[in-house]
Length: 118
Image (tube, rainbow, N blue to C red):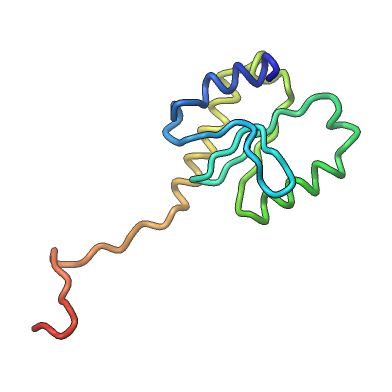
């Protein structure tokens, strides 16, 4: 794990943002740097090699999106240069997804009538 990944993991682990993140989580043929399974968010830290593999990254992101994940990408040095900003961007994405989550329908009047009973 790089220093940058270690720094970000320190701020994501133990449900510090209210959800569980996993580190180096396999999904299909890919491994996400950081993945939250509920809501579905992937956080990637991109090093300089990503400039030369843009097509591969697009295929990878497309696969993640097809699985229902939202992908956030940051330059590899972002957690070291702007730790609070990276965490806030992740937290904002989690807030957006929480607002989209369906709310359960609760019974009206405090009691549902059981079929066959009056």
